[in-house]
Image (spheres, one colour):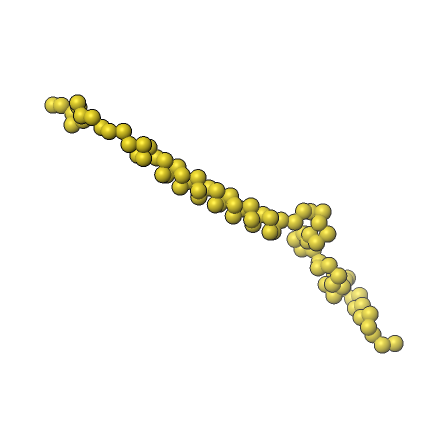
Length: 82
């Protein structure tokens, strides 16, 4: 029995070679890369940045957050009347 494609011409169509899928994949990768770059640029802080805070660090300039030993007296505010 002969094959159904035997002696049959199949025309060449360049659109059936996967180019649309390749272009779509490239566009998705480019969009994801741009999104990752934007997030990195808006959220990254260099470790030597003075505004950088490590996990568990106290806020800058907030003396109320200073951890004092148990039983130590509380600091007086700078605007207290004498």
